Amino acid sequence: FYGDVPISEALTQQEIEDAYEENTGKVIVKTFKDRGIDYNAVPAVLVSQHGPFSWGATPAKAVYNAKVLEVVAEMDYHALTLTHQDVHLPQYLLDKHYYRKHGKDAYYGQDNAKSVGHAAKA
Image (cartoon, rainbow, N blue to C red; front, side, top):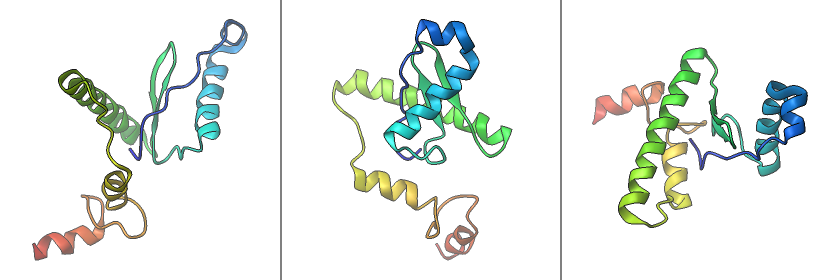
């Protein structure tokens, strides 16, 4: 994920009573739009007073992203418990980890054709 997983606003009582599922979708869209977050780069959200949602290009990728969200949340919980400090990555390190696997200049990862030749040289 390229950055923090956002947390949406809570739905109002009226939104819940009128069209719960539709308004849950709308609050997810609003969260990404208002914060300028690319939903492909951060394929998950925590809906306040509800829970996590994740997605992907395929059902398998959506499940994979859900598992990534759970594992990262657990690691973050343990890091915060142990350190009691902000454990955010600096932007330059987040950029390195994300862009080496995604985008036109990606060179790392199992799905990247360039990595096959690169790994053979190593």
